[in-house]
Length: 112
Image 1 (cartoon, helix red, strand yellow):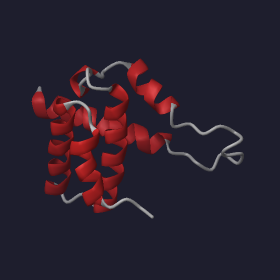
Image 2: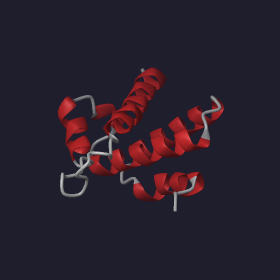
Image 3: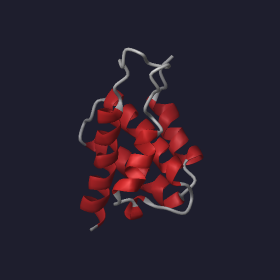
Image 4: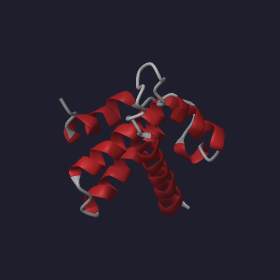
């Protein structure tokens, strides 16, 4: 069963260990709503960004994630092994990259 947008938004406040990142995600969500982004797209972006924020932990903010290693370390955790996905049908890396680039671009545009 798919996760509802309201559940994902609630997880933004409950699951993100860094308050700065949590607020940035909330601001990004407001930005997507204001620009009439479809709910499914909002939900997918938020789920990815929350997972990325969780992987950064409580000490690192999105303002500090401008290194390739931090992003690729997270993306590598999402690659399925050949035994889990022998036909390589699960191609999520592009969507993940898009969501991460969106929050980083939003952070740069909005605050700098």
